[in-house]
Amino acid sequence: MRFRGGFQASLMKGRAAAAIIGLMDKNIVSYRIDASDRIVEASDSWDVFAAENKAPRLTRKEVVGRFLWDFIEGSDTRHLFRLMLSKARASLSSMRIPFRCDSPEARRFMEMEIRPRPDCSIDFVCATLKTEARTPVAFIDPDVDRSNEWRTICSWCKRIKMPGGEWAELEEGIRRLDLFGTKRPPRMSHGICPEDQEMAYREMESAEKAKRKAA
Ligand SMILES: [Zn+2]
Image (cartoon, rainbow, N blue to C red):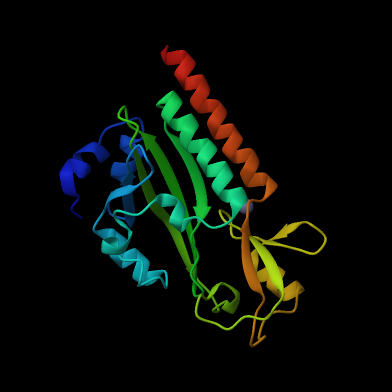
């Protein structure tokens, strides 16, 4: 894996260096945004990842130069993520978010590290921790036709919001909603489940604490 602009060297620094070196043999995708949230570079592994994730049009060439916010769906997700980035920049402390980046055929368990830099740019280092094959789930296939119904999915854990308000694992929710085998699954909107909101606030709090300690 190669990174432009000495990015690989900078990957080795910081408090998570040991963890990242340990994951070097696994799939790591990283990218950097500048102070205005524009994506300024992305690792070579980006294109492989995009193809595997059924987003072959989102090549590195396509994303570099664009704003991060063009790629984050859902106003709640955007709001929370903006808050996290501003806390990261203010505290200069890293944060970690476990998240799912599923494709229709696979559950992909990932972790994102947000690493603020003194010039207000931010590195994102995303590691795939585990991948599980599964029976393809049409609901998250970007290429299928949709009905006029809507269902909300959590941007981070990919659970689906049930009519009663609770969040269910994708397959379980789809089974309970009787969506397996439907030719036209509902449309998908993106939200953030309460557990992930809490996790984000915990990360922001520990970044604040780390800053106070360092001060
Ligand atoms: Zn969630």
